[in-house]
Image 1: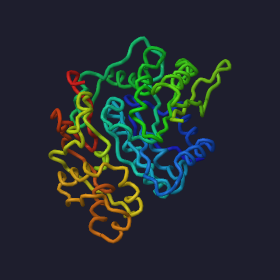
Image 2 (image 1 turned 60 degrees about the horizontal axis):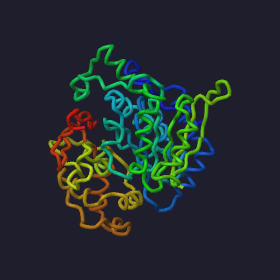
Image 3 (image 1 turned 90 degrees about the vertical axis):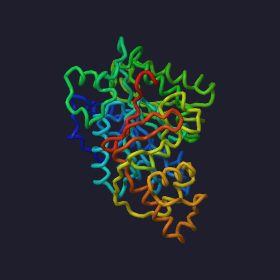
Image 4 (image 1 turned 120 degrees about the vertical axis):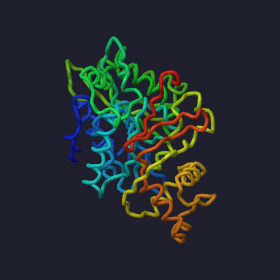
Length: 255
Length: 127
């Protein structure tokens, strides 16, 4: 078992606290079957280093884990550069702290952390750069989609360090509220994969039972990028409920 | 954030995506900080082929770093040219952008960078 990064410095009143879903991502990506897949899919040679992106890292626990243990998870000599993008400024700060702490504690196995930028999903990224995408989306089905609290929109951390209870609640809602079927944000990311991922790129996206994962995977196989190009497989599950997996990790990549 | 990140970022406005002027973003009033990172020529020579070299040359000049050669150096060239090796190592592996702005050459929008975090959220009229 690789150690889980410390997140004791994270303000959980406004940043999503690591939970079962975060740990399922960590466990799945470090499982023997997934590390075998990754080292085969990205064979070591003098090939270019990988760009690893996490969308919505929140506390940074998953990104810190993957960056700090990158030579264990990928292959010993594969170089990794990691990047986070989060809409919540407090999550950006937390992620930077969590990753920097974890990488300094595991410098022998660690990849290179680029930093975290504040942004709405992947709008600010150039096309086809990401080799490994990790996304623990806002997956809870809700009647409405939350907005970023208005007066926090264009303020940065140094201008605004205090928040009201309502603002904090709105920031947390961004981390879980997924709208119809809990899929409104996840669908945007899935639809952007052909532009986002590099030719060899792989995405790991977490789904809950309410997201209708079998339908999601079928839609990816049948129609993403015109259909017949993309694979989608469940590679990790947790929390059985009445015979159904409560949470699962779906791996999406080009055949 | 590491200066290297600029090689992966572009303007967040949808209307700028198609324009070659939106990449790379141009640092303005930049304050930099440096980490101490172990020199690794092999890593640099593996990294260079996946970067946009022209964009990197622009970024290097705009941040006041020495001009980079017109073509990305090979591993052999890096190992025999200590100055270019050190310049690239410093620029790509060690330098962080801490404060300042990133300006889109197409729409002119300025993205603020504070405490090492660039804010790419657009005001609603630009989304």
